[in-house]
Length: 88
Image 1 (cartoon, rainbow, N blue to C red):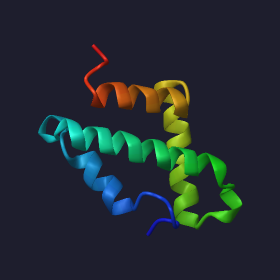
Image 2: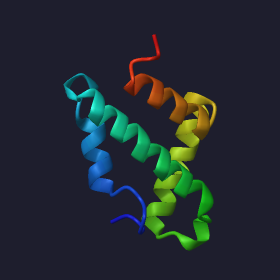
Image 3: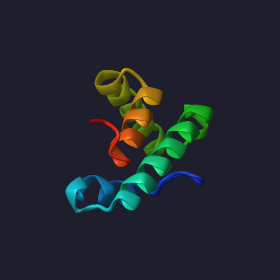
Image 4: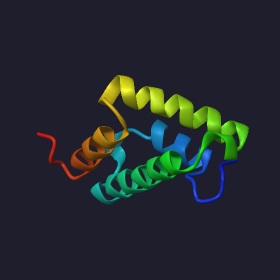
């Protein structure tokens, strides 16, 4: 279960296991937008006010963003470009 206003864990898992080549451009754009909204929510709410599961997930995602994309904002931009086919 996720905190109110956040992307549900089951939705997030379903999005991750579904291959991108089977998703429509609209689905990819929607995922990019909801990912961006979730990242903004992640950054604006302190870890102390989150449920344990949400806090652990957010910490893991922040670390992943730093390692793979240089930070949350860069990865969101990359996801939007990729969803719209502009990353080529």
